[in-house]
Length: 269
Image 1 (cartoon, rainbow, N blue to C red):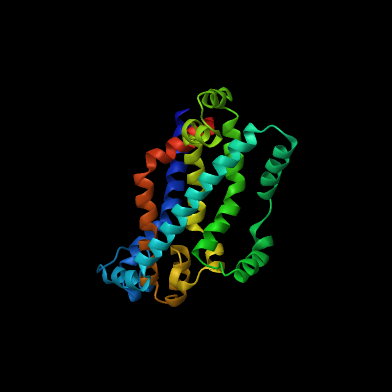
Image 2: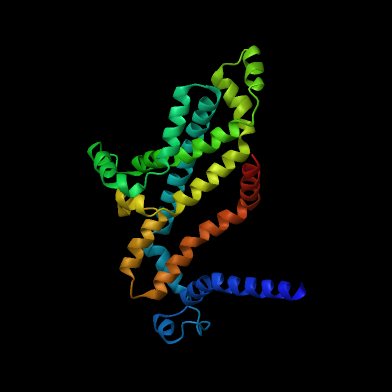
């Protein structure tokens, strides 16, 4: 038994080293000069080059890129949670053939690959002059609603309808019932929906590359332009990549407890 335990621990350690190796190479080489990267990739920097980060920060236009990513992600998540929760509530509480058909349409929409609607979608939004941040947020609402509505609909099955009836008896309308009674009970699944969508939206490159220009680019799109400019200057490219992942790491540590609680409670629901 102990031998099996040791083997498992050794395997986990090796797997951890494999996982952390790319981060080690990225961070270590971000502090090296261009010449030192090509002469010694694995070793520590002989002379720390902090100027790489200053130049990358300026050329990456990091403040604007970060602001664009935050705006797109926060607004998209807020709209997805708002509309998807109401849609899930309405479909769960109205037991009819039409509600079942609408739910099946949303579930079926999850099976449609983005690439199949990519060209007509961009063409349509281009005709109405919505190839901008507002158009991108609207697209995220469309692509993120299917899974979100499905999750909210499933969570609603665990909430008794008697709560709705009691609120209506007390004089509340449908929206007030949802806003003050039902939605607070959906907090765990709202956390799960937010986590699933923010990971996708924050790291998305393909959709912003079709909709946004370089001036209002998000971080993943800006990194594409940056790497295209500094393909041979790996010291600047790796410094820029290190800067780009800092907000993700900070955000994770700040919301770590909420993330774990949302995933676990959402799974139980």
